Image 1 (cartoon, rainbow, N blue to C red):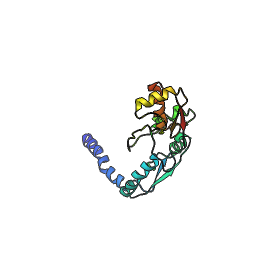
Image 2 (cartoon, rainbow, N blue to C red):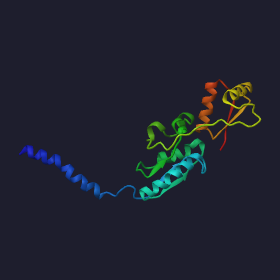
Image 3 (tube, rainbow, N blue to C red):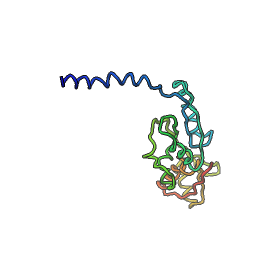
Image 4 (cartoon, rainbow, N blue to C red):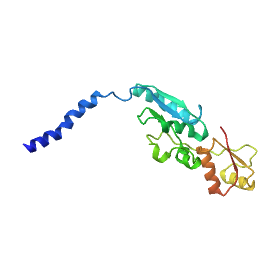
Length: 185
């Protein structure tokens, strides 16, 4: 008798759970907010919109893009970090997100612990472009020129903490070059 009770008890969850699961609403039941912590029209915004359109069609619910740009993407990331962890708020981040707490010590979250990556949406190639007045047609000539400027050259980036900013700092470090990083909005 005791053995039958154990067998019956072990089968009970298998019998009840499918019925319980079908009683729940199927996700998603409402629009999904997609926070883009950058300005409208930038590459992260474009990627988010390109991905959101087919996802909306597939899920049968709108994916609503919410641009929350500024402060090196910390504004949007903080909004995402405070959202309910219910699957109805996503954030499209970038490499800069991973070092946010180092660049901005007052940032209220630890990106590596407080955010969970869901999908890789793309990879980004980098190109160093120079004004025609710069006497360089390849990277070796560019590095020689920039070293000769001894810190007087400027290097424009997409903003503090952006992938282009981090890449410029890496170039400075690896090439032993000195230049001024100029963040643009």
